[in-house]
Length: 134
Image 1 (cartoon, helix red, strand yellow):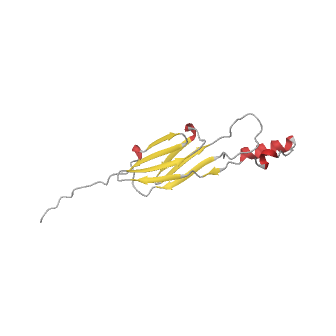
Image 2: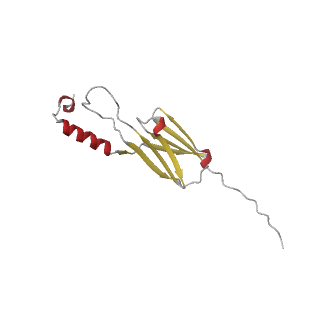
Image 3: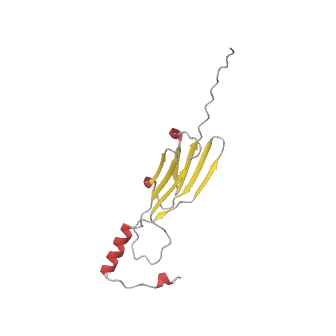
């Protein structure tokens, strides 16, 4: 067991209230871990967003900026918190998309804290040019 579990500090009610207000005002920005794969037809992005509910996950593509974000909230568990390694805050990460993608065909699936994005590559337009002789 760690000292954090065994040690309990005595705080006044006023100190506890100030501490709780400070926690509410500060939002911790977390960077999700991401893997990016690609093949001839798609770009695949897999992001870990542990503790984020599906309703709190957002994916946005604006021009060439892809942004994923999500928010975790504190767990309401009865009893006094003695030790914690779970982080709460807001996940946010942006990427510059350097290849042309089909914006209307992007798919996002969120399951068990993992976001899977599929960005279909835009097929190059081939235009046949008529050659005439003079």
